[in-house]
Amino acid sequence: MTGSTISDLRKSFPILFGSRWRVRGLDEALASIDPDALCAEYTALRQAAPRRSLAGKTYFVSHTGVASAAGRSNRLEEHCAIALVNLGRRWPRPEGDWFRILDYQVPLKARQTDARIGKIDLLGVTDLGRLMIIELKVMSHSGGRSDAPPAALMEGLRYAAIVEADLEAIASEAERRFGVRIAKEPPIVQLLAPEGWWRSWLDLLPAGDWGGAFARLAKAVEAQTGVAIECRALEDVEIAYGLDGRAPRLDHVPALYPVMPGEEPPIGDALSPASSADREGMTTYLETTYRALWAWAERHHGGELDGGRRQGRPPVLKPEFASRNVLAPPDGSQADKIRAAIGSAQRHKHFASLRSSQALAQSVFGAISAFERLGVFEAVTAECGRPAFFQTHRGWTVALEHEVDTLGEPRPTSIDVLLSGPDRRVAIECKFTEAEFGTCSRPRLRPGDAAYSKQRCDGNYRSQAGRSGRCALTTIGVRYWDHLPRLFAWSADRDHEPCPFGAAYQLARNALAAVVSPDGEVDPARGHALVLYDARNPAFQADGEADRQWEATIAACLVPGLLRRLSWQRLLTFIATVPDLEWLVDSLRDKYALLPE
Image 1: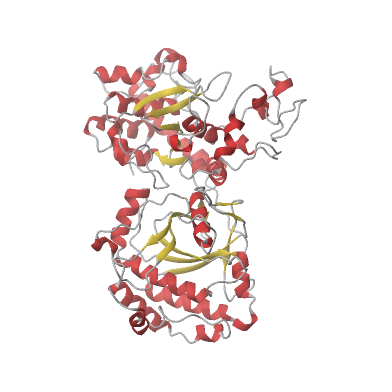
Image 2 (image 1 turned 90 degrees about the horizontal axis):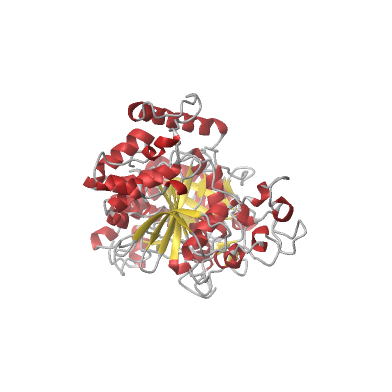
């Protein structure tokens, strides 16, 4: 179909590339469509579709998360799409699984002459690896309804046929860029719009009862082509436009509703992800992890354990053997460097426990530093598609338990791993079996604590306990709130109930550590914070406690890419390619049951 004119397309594909849908008699127009003819067009388009891979072009074109146009004009859909991508959310699906959005405005043209071939509004993937073509519709500035639902459906089907034609190339790109595996099956076409948009069409009398005909057509298309069609409504939200280089944002994370045209009621209850972090799920995960740790301890730490009971706890080394919790090669100067990467005075209270995330971080980053293999990080992308670490390792150094001295903290706390380059920094938080991210300690003060009388906090950002300032930490000179409003949508000069920084404390603080310069200035281009987590841990899966903290923090973030996320399993896929580090990959598998993806 390369070089085809609009007239040619309408002649070859009269349904898929047909004219605009009229409001009056929409029900009759839908009922008149022959499903067999529509599916035949889909098959023909899939066979004739342009393929960017054959033209040497990519599908993912390094979007920044900031709108390309500074003005509002007619780019509301673009701003909304970018805001949804920037959320980085795992959206629930009715079956209890989830999907996430990978990118926006994904191009499909192989050549400029490919008529009527536009860009996919949003491209997503389910947790089972099935691609999703998301056709996004919004209400216009004047309150107009924009395109009719069947027009959106035809556009989504056109894009699905083109995507399916080049699925192998798209899958390869998606794995390199986002670390996701794409299933070899037809995509899902999702029509996504605010609830108000859907109701404006569902309640439109001149359009007739079009929902039943729409549902029957969608069902027939799925039966013949395998392309699933689903309709979803977003809770109505306000969009903060991405002006002057700032990222578009939604005023809050919207709920997602199933839309069922032809049924009553047509819009169902809000979808909620099946929680993976319930008590039973976390218990099972810990039991499995502890079994691996005990098996390792029996093989490598005979006579070195503290003698504590085995049931329901991980093995713990005696204090004099704590250094052996760090993985190292059997001999050589590299082993000494790895063990020396964190001094004994910097060890956490539970460093001797074999579940210690600090020991895990020292094992991995200490080995990479000792063997001078920082180059392995160059190819690693975070879940958002941006570099997890850096693009080139030249000039970068590694420091473990780096003390932050730019935030005015009386007792500087440490970053698990800090990567420092010529003009950027990456603050890395390493998690393993933790059930959540660290939260602000002030609300946990109790009577009898030394700081209770002056620094106690009820969890709200407001004046209390006789203080004039809203934050207890600000009153003792900590400068968090001097900088937070530059990075997050949290105003420092008004009350917040609850304090948004409280639950986001560790995530936001790591972001500050990455971008606050030694002279106390915030430079968002100076770096980013990265979270490493165990993909098996229910707390970091959809609707787990850590995942909820992550989503709330990302939703408030004003700087796309400031916070990034990567699983240990994904990182190990790259480390496993380094011959010098085969021993490390084997040890991580045997001790922690951590496997490359």
